[in-house]
Length: 389
Image 1 (spheres, rainbow, N blue to C red):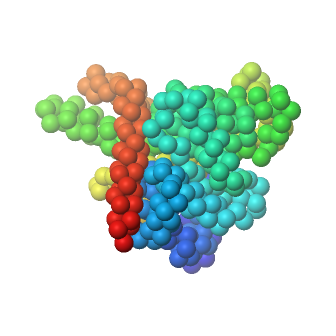
Image 2: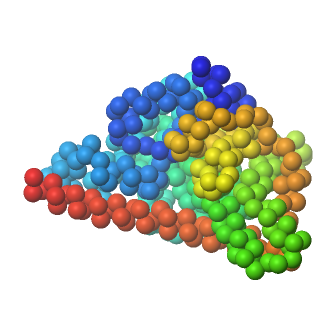
Image 3: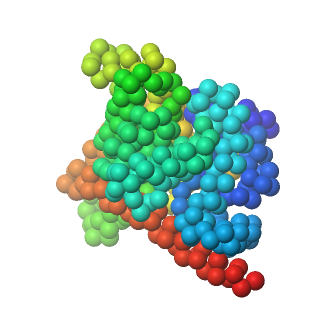
């Protein structure tokens, strides 16, 4: 099967780019990443502290570099950064032809600033600058959480010409705020007479975690619900909220970046587009299905659409290559998507989606901090072990 015949290739023909949510040193050195680029139409890579923890802990491929770092007197953080920066650079090299042939649309490798500074604007700006300069590749993208503290850092980074992947977006409003942070950053750069055509950004909108959270709340209500009509309402929206939320977010994307109206908002973007600015694409993240009762490609099949990215873990990439049912569905049943979200307000359901999103954001930061801290502890242990060898 050729790349274009593969469902992942067909998705590309419909205007969506597939990025992989995984990066390890052996993935690059073994040639597997090259193989995936050629056979699975992988057009970018995302990483995070949890991915690097899995990659480095217990993997001897990093031991020599860790030992060398320790011998040279590097701190644990410096050792960690030397490992991940090398992996990012090597992946950037492999994806550079895609970056160049797509005129900077794809071919990016994302790396996240330390999760421990997610609530510190100034420190995030400093680390974004440092990471971007240290890695030194045009196709690196710095991940900044879409928190209240993170968005001013996004704006500043964009104004300085740093590619940004805004991560941990759950609510539609958080996406809208992110889009305007991007636009403001470009406006500042344009006002300073600098080129805006070489900057790229994606807004990483999370999916499966939403369904996991909402389904848990629905299941609790089902435990005590006895009225068949109420139970039917609760069951009807299980596994439906994340995709509906994403479809609503895509409509907001169109209002901001594709509107043909004469509103001040539309004219602001149009002025930047005329200078060559790229739209900030929505990126579907957290797309590995958590519930075994749901399709393992549900967050792929239902959200294919132009000017989007879907970042998939390896298992979902292979599942999609095997049995994705490809179609341009991002704008199908949009009114039904709004209706599903509205059903959460039904007194018999009573789920406050804003509260859910706030809790998911807090949990998301913790889910990056915990593996980061665990990795640093594991590195410390490994340094001690290697010192005795």
